Length: 381
Image 1 (cartoon, helix red, strand yellow):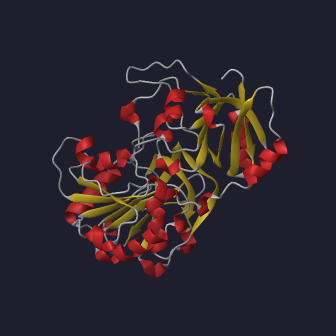
Image 2 (cartoon, helix red, strand yellow):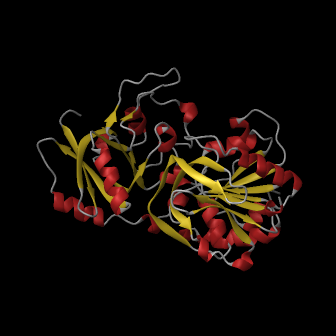
Image 3 (cartoon, one colour):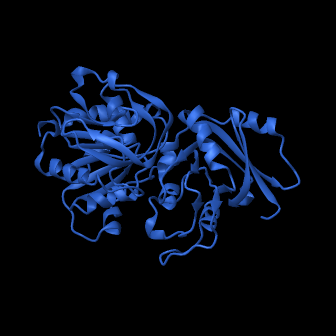
């Protein structure tokens, strides 16, 4: 690896240099470039399916110092397209760690690039917005043609054109998830429609005495109802919500069914679209563990963990839909939550399960468990 270098080119012509790690034999990767500001939790970030199709810049300068421990993964594999860091630590120290982040990424053919000026790169993305990019690995004495790299970055397929949800979703219904996460008895039954769910969402539900069943995102209404769900969770996931039309149609069918629904991140956006609202792209997304969110009904402010590129447009929510804004982001006033005035439905743009990030909002799972058991209409309390 000593004789290798890596070059990151963005579609707008910006070039950044570094040293490859992870799956250096891959030689090239491409995707959208986003930055994440969490100071810890790189393993959870790598395994968050919401990052599918994206190359993630971590703003914290030293990554890998506590290694990789299998009990901290948030999915069955890491999903990000590449990891971009300032300094990678190969000599980790933690009693749960079993390997370095470099060997972990290599195991799943994921390329990393270190020695990057991540501060300059983050400022560039903050100023100019999310960009498509390409990373190429080459011999130290052989510099790739910069203009050709930039042109290649401009040809990277936009994430809205990709079936990233289909890539991360489970292929078959899974009944064994709960018992593998928490060894307790469970009732009632919660069905998670897998658009890229993080394990900690299922874990938080199981800890509240709920049975968790995971189904593919392509599940039909008949297949879903045959499972006799007492509640349905529409979780996080990657990509453009408008591209998941099959789920928008399913949710439109479920809204008047009075089955309790909880949406998280992508699930929140899909509920809004099914209600007739619109979504739009944020300039550089929300990817971090320190976003202040206000409950507009109580005035309570909590710090949240977030990972999304799209938002629900508040002005587009049809008054006749029965949906109302419950939470707003205090940094940019974007919509962070919805509730329905007549049905047992609520949704959150942020990640109440955290991992990584603060645990301020895990009470949202208590609320959902209460709704499931009592049939409470969320807007009535």
